[in-house]
Image (tube, rainbow, N blue to C red; front, side, top):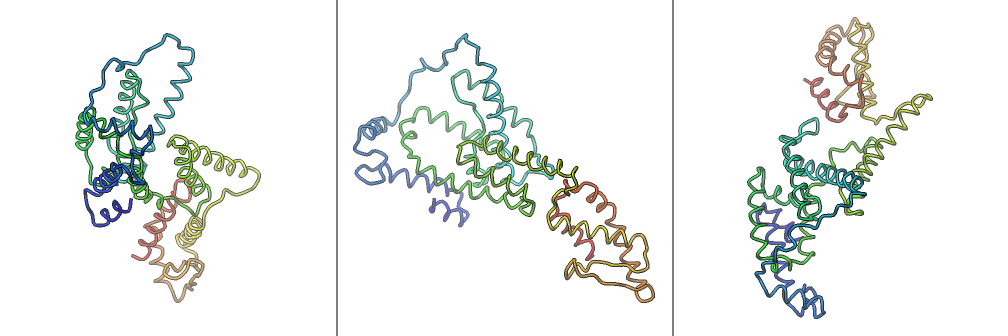
Length: 337
């Protein structure tokens, strides 16, 4: 892991190859504390298989044996559907976010084609008795190395075909050689957590549960289910409690935006004694302008308010759809201009 991290710091495209390859070669030497072939029955069996180098397995078990018992087919279809869909969604969105191709609505280009390929692959894989063929998070290593197109996937597919004949070598790569690479990939993908609004409790709790449940359950699907269900319960509770007089919780930035919007409305109404937040100092500090001394300032403030009034009105009408920090920074920039 440290080898990969150091190589990545130097922008090396071969960082993952160096790290995994070095640890694998060291683990192939017998008689060491880190060997993959210890002096046990299991270790000897692995070493005997490793010595074959090339091995072609028979195709007599290529097609899975089918059964006419469809009693549990419905349950199996529903289970595989949500597992495959959620796993694929989490992986594709995570990879696409690392590539920087996610738009403001959370979509990425050609997402329909990506999901379709995953679905067709799963159907064909079932013929051969394979588990759902879904996109894997290991693709993040390729993205960090610079992969942006499907050409990388085609080359990896070709290598997988070659790997069929060199199964003894590839099967002897120890888990601790791959684990470090996945830790690095996870740490790099964690950059997207900075986009969470941690000032809002429902967002912070749901985001944390999604992240922590995935490794604890070994399932992306379970992590997404935990986060989505928690968010629905919390936001649903806030909505129901609003009927008994409790306001829907908002964070400090949304409260500041609401206060800023109220000040804009006062300005646009042309009141004689107008209050404007001092953006450069603190939103709580207000400057008072009298009619006789600040006619020019009020006129300028009114013009500024009109330029952002429409946008701010939309924000105040639907606070739940606001990205508070981003919108607030835009308003600050426009006011300073």
